[in-house]
Picture 1: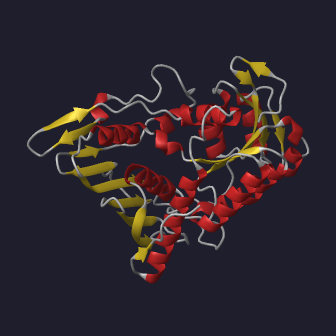
Picture 2: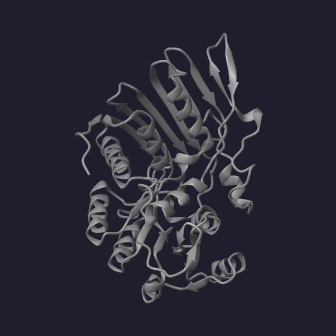
Picture 3: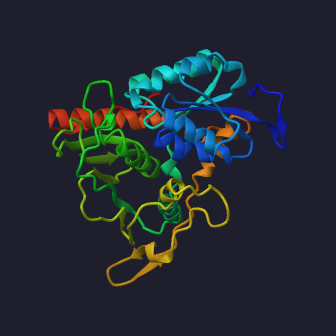
Length: 364
């Protein structure tokens, strides 16, 4: 599936183009691509002069072009395109990649609706190309720890799951993410909610019913900046998910409640801060969290600290490389990302109609 004559140990080198070099492209994609064996960052697409200079400084030898059209002109030189652009452009760019015979990784949410996601998945199948949604927080250390404890039966029977991504952003930035304009897919439900819902589905399975409250609190913002979503999982677990741009003080990141024990975990995964500080992914110390930030497992009368497993964002692109070589399935199956979008669309409807919305059995 890789059309290049260049070789390294383990197989052909996969040539990558990155569309978008804002914070997402510069911090959450480019460093991981550049440090993943088997991948090489060949092209960056950005029309911003400052970002162009940053790309050339950080990745000597990379080609920088100003538009996706210029990228498609050299499509024979690219095996994989990574799309880190505003949400409304994800589908058109991915479809163009497939038309040019190129695999695509698409930042979350990979589509603005479940229907659009299904259409993109169909186009990828027809072109015999991979469509891989970028849900990097599946490799947060705290989330990996919750998954491991769940697999060990440490909670007994889980009945409640609380998960939060809170920020303190009292002043609007004017970003498209704060726009409620139809089709833009701005707002916290699409942004942080994509992570919260994806993690809940991965832990506790499909959802039977959704209830949501989506509020806009800050002057000048037209998209929701304060979000609550309740998921009734088919498994019997109920997930309460929160995201806010107006959390002046921190609250627990996770609270897992079960018949035998509960886990309370504070603080966000350390990898985001490390990437933004310019640290290179990988190495023995990557993703490790200090003991003072570990979660506490047990009951009110008997609880113990639980070491946080190392976060592992590099695993995503290692999985992408393996999938393109045909050695493994994609690290994030597209049908799971479509199920997440089904929940987002149900949450939007619930908030609009002020009622619980029942979901039909999942389909792809």
